[in-house]
Length: 370
Image (cartoon, rainbow, N blue to C red):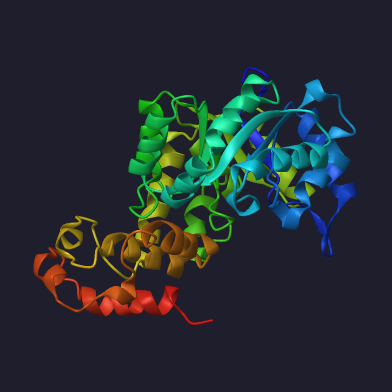
């Protein structure tokens, strides 16, 4: 990991586009600016940008720069394999697409309880560790989207994992449906360096309601993205913060404040806290996540987590909350529509919430018929 020059990486899930194709000319200019500014970490996956991210990196990075001048991360994504026998051919295909003969970092992609079960069944971790021994991978890690207890399970079972990539931003930090803080603490417990993804929550911490963004704009100290990325980068054990950049303007802004990185000062931290407070006030369900209701629910519905998803959906309206609803909170537990209206949850709720009615609202948002 000592080849990483600085704590800011180019996330290649979002790239400059010309129509439906990657704009190679613009992307090459961005790659040049990134490397010339002293950064060298690039992150991709086989399905990013409709399958065009890896080949774009070959055209604009790996065919133009010496292999020692950049660090390249790729991932084994669950949608691209079903058996153990398919993993190595997929890996070779990724190397070819990127135009390299090894990956500096290779991640088991988007791990959650369900994905982890599949990866174990297919011996994916064991295959990756074999590739590590063969020198085809230099560092082995995971990217993670689930609760902290699942992360703890994975790192306990596979202590060979060298680093963990987690969703981490100031709004999700204490969100009970995502548990960024607790996942970060699990990484620290196991001594694993952290790579941050979604520091701007998919652009939502840049495209905020005006009454909220004004708090940060009034500081007159930088872009909205700068506060989000610097927040994440300021934590002990965070070795890398990734940012998806779709234009040279975004690139120049990001490298401007990350070239000589400074953590948030007290005034900026206070402004971030105020922004979080304003976001919380927009939440329509004042659930405190005490979890008394989940202990009583006969259908195993993770009521606080589903409420947190609905709150986040109404504030940000992005794909991420749908992902957590369908792929984390309801995979092995009840959906909102599974509620049998017994009322046991409402008897125990310290906030006296009309939980049965609210679950109908949650189901209406996340279980819409196609």
